[in-house]
Length: 134
View 1 (cartoon, one colour):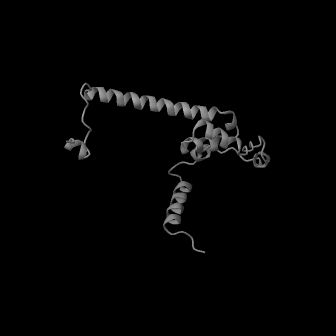
View 2 (cartoon, rainbow, N blue to C red):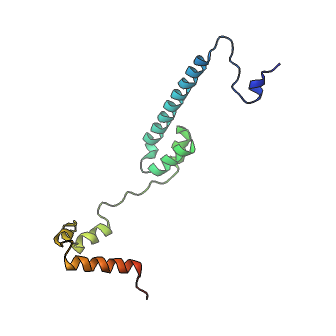
View 3 (cartoon, one colour):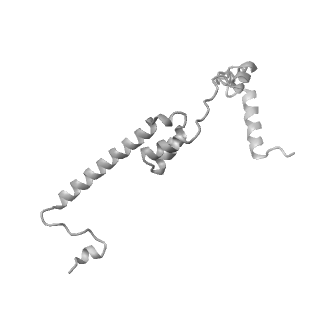
């Protein structure tokens, strides 16, 4: 006859000669070995020669569970992402604009109880409560 506990979805019966501690130890070893295998796979995909210039795709290969060989084939068939130019047009335009240094020190020049600070506080409060209508 079959074990009613095992048939009901409980823990399978322990084989003679194996204790629960033996099973727990084997399970823990399996988890450790599995984690190491996954780290090794991840490292191998990221270090693959075809991953250079295709990092985002390499991460997708990892998340998809592809093997190192499958990942290498997919990466090799995909175009590399162009590296961003060191001096982009945007960076050049921002540098040429001559933007002022803003570090927040300007705010400390106004006394909190000064008429200007009080008026600014009221303006801000009413602006938030009743925004301008167009």
